[in-house]
Length: 510
Image (cartoon, rainbow, N blue to C red; front, top):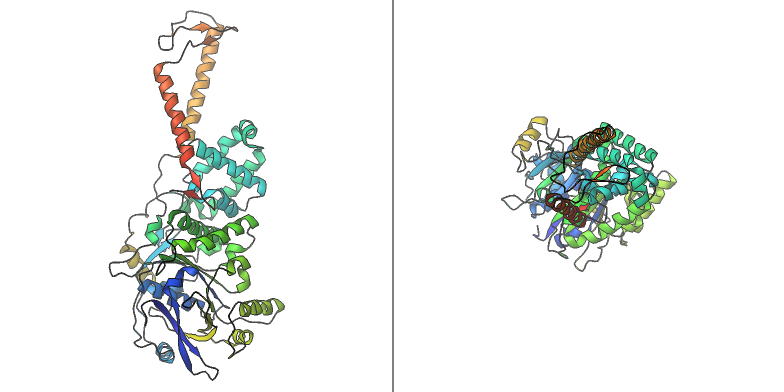
């Protein structure tokens, strides 16, 4: 097969005889794509074929494994009769069995290396979606992040955000005067949402060490791209966490990677399975930013493939950015299903040899309508295509096979243990203790003043003077005090300047 493309399969003529090879050009891999079709029509195998192809070409891949089946890509396939027959039908010669280099990840740390983000990196926009906050509550959360950025409070894990919210509730009057109305009921509602998130496993996701983007963009010593697989069967029990996490990861790639234009092959290909979860009930502001990310991330060398049952799951503004299409069979029993088939058919460049609408409803398992970008970046004429068989195993790894690969992983030992360094929680705790100590000292001083008695001279702060109401005031600051306050002010202001948030509100590190 050609070194500059990924072989997808072979198209068929109207009499079902062989027509031609169908491939995806690597140089258009960053022009994004769409894989759709009803359950059981072969979408997972198509994803596996693409992932194997990109990996073999030296392109790292990130994808989620909803049912566990995709893990088989890490094992050498078996030459079963139906696979050998399909290879012959599409003229795949030689048909070799091979495993792909895989790194397994799991937010819960059970079926792969733990994968984490910090609260600061996630940002207020994505957190608001994750917790399903109202517009007013999202406004309060934005103020909380603003204060954290200004005061140099690192928000790493959930207890950091919880302690910050407590602090904000105590300072509600002061903060409202600066930033607008901050009510204790709104803060309380956010705290309750945090509690729900904690019970759903948020404490395992938020913390350090946070994922380094470079660890999902690895290539092996043999030149093949590493395939990062996120175990998502348990994660799918919380669809909002699943979709928000993948969206955060996409935004991190967008913020961290430099512009490179259109490379000869992508730097990374990102497969977003169950894509409808990203767009369901998403506010308009978020959809607009997602569209921006999809449109602009192409020039950073990242290709994004959305996978879903129905093309209507993806908004038209995003759908228009997807140049490579693989459409498996759809049912057309209800009016909505018929509309979905019509939408899918209308997105293809028509082929005079067959009716695209009818073809979509008559495709067999492992068969799809395929249209990719041709040499000049123009969509090719849609072709009815038999998808080639994968080289890896079709079906999941067993527990022992998976664990062996986890132990031998290039990131083994890096993320396995959570680190809890000093951050907002510890700093606010210290501040609370210090404030309490100062209040007690002032109370004791006031009691001493009210009873009279001898007073020692203030050797450190200059001559002690009596104020107009009898209280004690210092004559001047010491040199040490003045220097310390200057340092605190400069550190605080530099932190405020350094913390910059990107298009989706996540923390920009550049």
